Image (cartoon, rainbow, N blue to C red; front, side):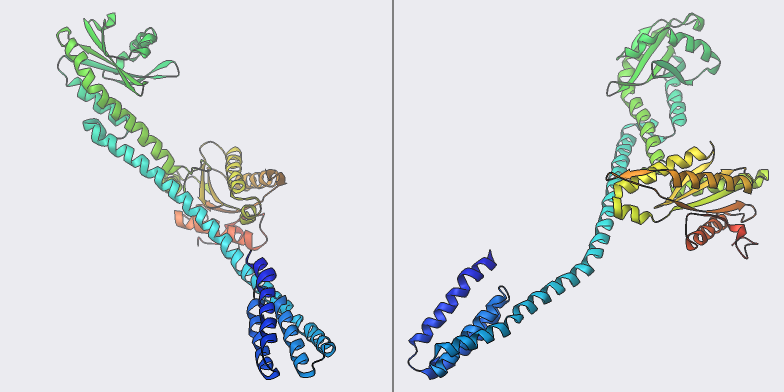
Length: 455
């Protein structure tokens, strides 16, 4: 809008005013003094409307020639030459502005892309941090409300603690705790384990109890040789968490029913806390994107496996794997496509390894695998199968099919090292050499020159 006003309003208006003032001046001396004023006006307006420079210069020259010669023919011809000479000025300004813009964009665009990637990573970390904070807050609230039960987070410890609390209640002789899972009862805790088979038969014949919502008094099984039993359904949000059977003295039965209304909310909070803690623990040890072990938990398991291998004189192999040119995938197809590649390769790695082998996401596009009790030959075969399967797997993004490759570095215990750091360093060094030699390959540390000892 500003350019249109300058081009079609301000420029003609200034020229008209200047010519009008020129005609009003009494003699040529004043007129010649006025003409140079056109030049700064032309340069100022030319920043927004470059042709104005040539237009103002040509007008000034025409008036100057006319003032000197008083002949319009000479003035027009001279101004024409001046207009053509000055016409190149706006094109120079325009070209200079285009060049400056291109130079700015050349420096700005890479920084803008890097900033977008960093911002996305920060947002992801914030979301994960917020999720963990919410989980911790929920667990903390349950800790405050759960009293004695929430001193423990392990499910077995909580059940044992619950059993001890109930057995301390007056009149209670034995306790049986069951869960209701997928339409069947599951034994959780029995104060008399030798009665498990009889209890399982009893609860199978009393499936209707899974729908009960309040504590109730019921006859005990005949084999208990008792006169009273109290049933407590442990629920939260209408979901049945557990069912508790209290074998009690008849005189204490009514008291147990009344106390159930007090104890059941606390029991429910204790049990749900253990469930939430287990879920959070699973999340802390498993990568949310791939489902594989996180680096920290993998290293813990890795150190345990080294101790086990040392004790039993066994061997194992370690893979360090890196997706080749993974940044190109993100830059070309977007981070959602990159995430899908990571998820798909994690499933592929699990398919080509054995149950019991350890798989982890080491960081970014790097993965780590520990193969139990394999020979170097077997490890190479598995690595070849994985590399071949990855190179054949086809991905799709933005209606475009593409493939990726991986590089694999291998170290063997105990030949390449006897500690976690030594084996990781050896496998990483082999991986580095693969990437340096062109990627999409497999290399064992012991095949490198000068690799006779652990690094």
